[in-house]
Length: 280
Image (cartoon, rainbow, N blue to C red):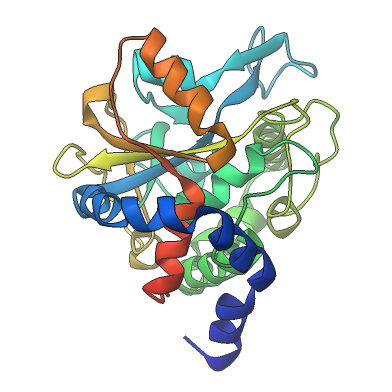
């Protein structure tokens, strides 16, 4: 990691970090060893949101959603199930519908932040999403473009398929917004996106070790950060949940109603651990 990157990570939202620690230091210190133990038994992470829009047909076809669904409750009851997205069309020949899993918590956290309600943010995070997404983006596409795969896809794909590609990219943003604010925006602009669903928040789901059968991704630069699977990951494969500290109580109450037990950790506490461990 270069000097500028390290400077950003150590100083990003420093005053927020100091304030957050001042308020939550005792709780953080008391739970630190337990959290580290949980993380040591976690192999992968999946980022999502508490709430999202659902569509009568699907988000790639319908212009407006039919309503809002409680994504987290569905996942707790039904497990994580495969979804079709752009990644499978470009890089993955094994399956058209998969689950995205990050090898590092920050990878999943960056995606989960898209579901934070407009005007809200985590109490503290170790580097902003744009910083991490730029790093991942260039690492991925440095490797992919060497094989000319992505370039070939863009330049040689018939116009109809390019149109479908755009529809799928726009459909992705419609998961957390219905006003079209991010329709047609690029990857980096989306890094700072927020949801227009009131009281929405991000969720990171930890996956236990030896519970995932990864599909083969033929690009080492991608597989450094992400794996894909098309199996259903049921609740018993989850090691823990991470949500913003202000949403801990709600999620614990929802788990109790469903008669489910699983550790629920503030995302901010894991971010503080990333800071302490100088994660890079």
